[in-house]
Length: 373
Image (tube, rainbow, N blue to C red; front, side):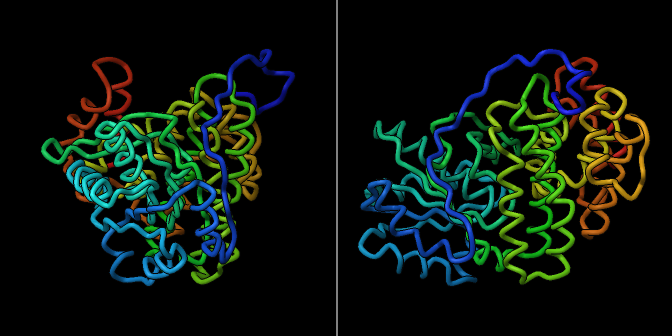
């Protein structure tokens, strides 16, 4: 952690890895550049992967197909929440049958992760890694990540893998496409982005560039999520939130995820809870617990977003940060307890066991799960 005053910090020392993402197009109406972007990626047979709702309840697929023209190769609209493994298998089979040479994803984290997994499955079958162009409609920021989460339906457990080559080569951030996203999903995915940013600051090691981006992301998300709730159709605010989500996961290959994400992955797949909602529940409690162990990064957050609290001292500022995030979840009208989303109290120990091996971290996780319930 490098934020908090250069005179108090040891000499910086570390590494930074760049993901092979080439191009981000952003702003209202940026979908109009889809055809040119597919051409830039040398795509001749573009195959779209999305979910049922966007395919059936919006005109987005028709608009994408029109812009692609002769480059349209087909679509798989069967990716469900948490990216079930069977959906990935079907999507890969249909993309191969369509002789796709480029993959498009449309939607939130599940279709985007699903498309990464489809790309890997096609490579394993045919020996060719197809380029991926992502068009997100939530704030999950999966389009900026090399991580892939897939659910094993039999075990109801989230598995996954990491492969820097699978990060989408291009991203189109068109805030106009987010207006069809249900408000609870939009806001909770914004809290997922908040979770990414906070965990960047809590990650061990020196990360001078991601930390600056993460702190700015936290400030913007804190201000703009309530504004988006108040005026759902404000495309300018939605576009700014897309940029904040990008900042929240900037260079994520360099920072390890923390307890909030680790517990959220186990809770989400097992109880079918959206990952944005798991972040609403886990993040404030993890921040509160970390305030004593890692006060400096949380104090930086507290000074930035809890201005009205007039905090004094590092410990007070760190605790104010956790409380400010808890208050934000309440203002957004999102779930704050595991008991609100159908997690049985009797299962808390098994969640901790699935997340951590025996030891201190498992004990800490169980204690926090008790508080979250």
